[in-house]
Amino acid sequence: MTISIQIARLPHGEDLPLPTYATDGAAGMDVVSAEDVIIPPGGRHPVATGFRVAIPDGYEIQVRPRSGLAFKHGVTVPNTPGTIDSDYRGELKVLLINHGGEPFVIKRGERIAQIVPAAVTRASFAEVEELDDTARGAGGFGSTGQ
Image (cartoon, rainbow, N blue to C red; front, side, top):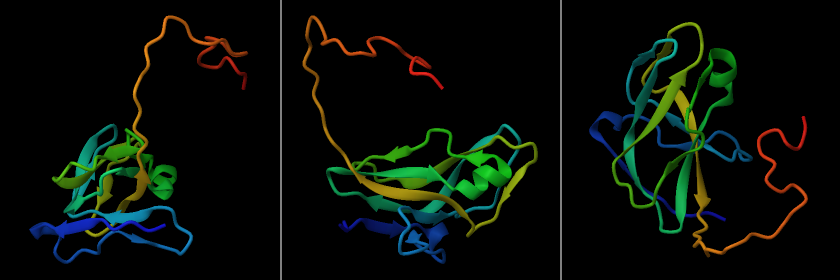
């Protein structure tokens, strides 16, 4: 299934590639930086992409880290997956955090993240006095073993 997402370049993104799939089997589209940035160890920065989008109602865009940046440099998206809502019309920025021990240099035009369009399921809550029992019950973090 393919959906159509409107995209508008901003002046600082005019000569950059639009998000694209690197391979036929890729789930995410690569996104590049529209700015030069140095993120110090422990630092974070909302990296500009140079574009805005109009996501159709009923969808979101999930922003996900690039595995190579996480593995090689400790650089990731701290709120993974980040969500871009269908009613947001500002510049798409990618919040990156450097968990590595060295400053991380981003050059304009380098791939920084992936975006994945996803359908959104809306829900409503039905307040009740009691919930049904399950085998797990209220067992929380780590309750199902290692």
